[in-house]
Amino acid sequence: MARRVAIVGTGQTDHRSHRPDVNGREMIYEAVKRALDDCQLSIHDIDAIIIGNMDHFESINYVDTWSVEGSGAVMKPIMKVTTGGTTGASVAIAAYYHVASGFFDKVLAIGWEKNSESDTTAAIITCSDPVWDRAFYSGAIPSLATEASAYMKQYGATQEDAARVAVRDRTNALSNPHAHLRKPITIEDVMASPMLAYPIKLLDVCPRTDGAAAVVFAADGVAQKIAPKPAWIRACAARHTYSWFGDVDYNAGLLSLQRASKEAYQRAGIREPADEIDVAELYLPYSYAGLKWIEDLGFCGPGEGPGFIRDGHTDMGGKIPVNPSGGVISTNCIGATALLRVAEAAMQVMGKAGQRQVPDVEVALATGFGGCFWSDVLILGKARP
Amino acid sequence: MATERDYGELLTLTFSTPMPYEWSIGKYGSLFFHEIRESQRFTGIRCPQCGKVYVPPRRLCAPCFKELDELIILPNLGSIMAFSVVNYPFPDPATGEQRPIPYTYGCIKIEGSDNIFNHVIDETNVEKIAVGMKVAAVFKGKEEMQGNIQDIRHFRILG
Ligand SMILES: [Zn+2]
Image (cartoon, protein in one colour):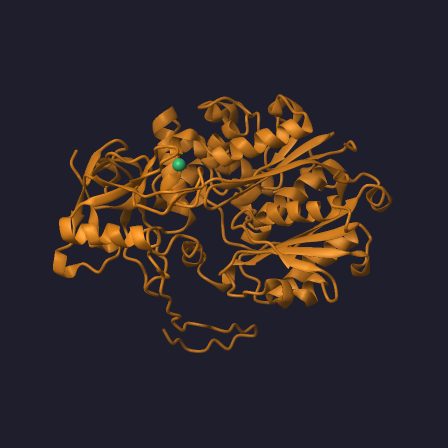
């Protein structure tokens, strides 16, 4: 029987496009220090560490050993978990498993990326099959663009509908002191920004960020002593669907997210996600995902995403606020990105989200997305499950 | 690629050495390129459990976790399921050089297959491309072929 587990502390760097003032280890340290300070623990209290980032981005193969001076893992169990874009959620889930297993009471999860250290697109291309896909694959944007063009064709969604999602997230980022992009934008700005890959324009898509995140997980009985209001893990689920880009059925929606969220809702006893979840931190790497993937999450029906956004249901103060932090469109230190979703969801449950706090959060949802169309889902709650 | 050392206060270290790899294409993948070279036609493979036809042919069906061996000859024709015109510059990890842009990345359903074949469509004007259009593969000349995915030059829109 798995033990109950809660998040007791979170920490993140002040995210920037380039941090030449720190190397990777030093940047990791900043997030770890803040997470430990947040729950008033010392590194000596931590029993094990899970760390993750994107393979190839910094050309560091043994991040687990290389990072120890920043992660604090000297003479502790540490392992690297890397699953592409979902890495940050996968380290969170792995940390949860470690504590739930009963072997460890307090486990630190770390995600980080120094996107400035290589060409992000070239590095992402190395995730594609070298024989069949790599010659024409050009990183995350076109595979998302193909998904977007298929969605627009199927439901008549427009570029303006998508722009509304980017404006929502970038507006929310104004209330997050850690966010990378903190300049307000309008729908007109999005529409006028350069076309990267039809129908995705510069302001529809996430930036490249240097940054790190750290989250402390603790066991039932220990957690309550560390944090007065810990964020309990109600459920988590992961689904990986495809190994070839050509196997994606674009018209079926994001199948991995449909399946992972269905399993997580079932475990958490959620029937009407939009009514029962108070806030969602979603890994939306580009604006069109904010239309389509909320359908896959069951916030609304197929094709209803654009209307759901237009009616303000996902705005701050709406039925289910999405990405109070500003989301991935405002900050994208890739290996940390999905862990930031988990950290932000935990902060919402713990009432520690400052200016971006949604009132009275009982249940929060966090997701991770990665190539090749993989999804992780976590549900956190105020009540001990 | 050698550039002048930037001696600003905060220094960075540059690495730009090529690191060669040699990837195995496998039995069925090799056969796919041989068929293109000899007969200018596509080969697919059918899963004995779910019946799905994959192109290019592969040894395994992932959802069924079954080995495949029923090869099928397919036409060089397909239709556009999705596409994207790539407009932004980036270094190609295959060459180390900037990949020429713009180009159109196409998700093509080859007739008689059940998955999508990803390649290039030789049209970069968004107004002239639509999901559902029929396309045909254009091959390189036999003497130019190298046994790789570029043996298919591109897909041409038939309308
Ligand atoms: Zn099968």
